[in-house]
Amino acid sequence: TEHHLIVIGVLAVGATAVPDGDHLPDPDLRIDRFGARLSVFHQEGRGYQSQADVDASGRGSEFTFIANPVLYMHVSHREGITHDVYLPIDILTSASTDALSAVSTASRDNESFTLDVTTTIPDTDDSRFLVRWGAHVEEELKSGRGGLGLSLDFADDNAQLVLAADAIVDVFDPVQYNGVDLGLTERLTLSMNASFSQLLSESTTLTIGYGLTGQIGHIHTPWNSVPREGGGRIGDLFPPSRLRNAATVRLAQAIPDSRTFFNAAYRFYIDDYGAIAHSAEGQITQYVTDDTWLRVGYRYHIQGAPYFFATSLPQGT
Image 1 (cartoon, rainbow, N blue to C red):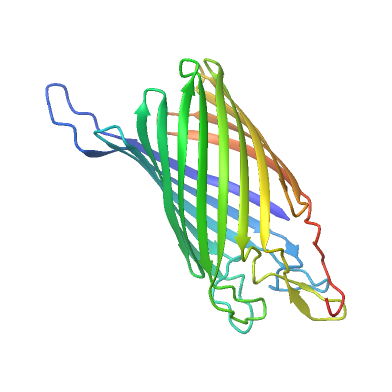
Image 2 (cartoon, rainbow, N blue to C red; image 1 turned 45 degrees about the vertical axis):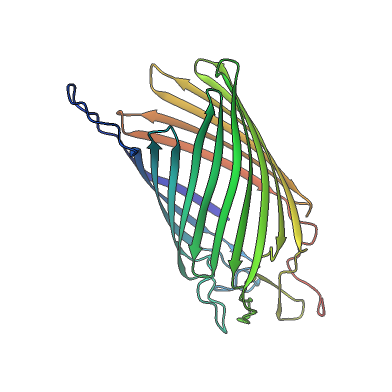
């Protein structure tokens, strides 16, 4: 499978300064920063789970085209409370659950909207409470999330520890690969995350993170299926729960004189299904003007299959 990711552009606008001599009262609520980004993702390939344009080997097209605009705002209160607001919008051609009927059309268009807000409440000079909340809406899925966290500064603000716990509830219509509609079902995801960041020098930062995630409910994708030996297909069969572990390490290096920034990261993933994954990525960002930058990135990912993976199943399974 081939993947291409292109970041088209970034726009950021800061708050407008008040001219000297004008003494206006501080507003109760103000937008300190606004940004917009557009990403385009294109994928080609074939797999046994897709039923679109199936070839002689039984593999269907996994073509997808995704346009992803994202809006961002940083909002602050006079009391010091701040909100980081993200509004991603995904416009997908292929790889969606769009309007499944008697014949699966899981490779048609779909749109999704997400609201993701993190509220930061100052406690002391070195600690803050975090409240995260939001929602996601698309044609066959609705979800809501909420979470709490704590951020602590150490070593004269040269180190930071962040602890957080989140819960996500998904409600969706699990229309099967053959068009059978079983009615609404749900999935619950609980996660606990910890990250530690250390300033190694004036221009170098190291971050280490770990996340533990548990899921119960309808976990698998309902419209996926695999062929049976001798003809016909069967839907995915997953255990009713899943426990996932992920550990990350990231190194960031800045070169202020040339306004160049390097990022390198590695992520290790393992779950109780037996799937193991390794991801490595690197990025170089070069500022051209104060508001314009160019970025080049590369990501390598390799992942093993869960213990119950199969490309075809015997009749009767």
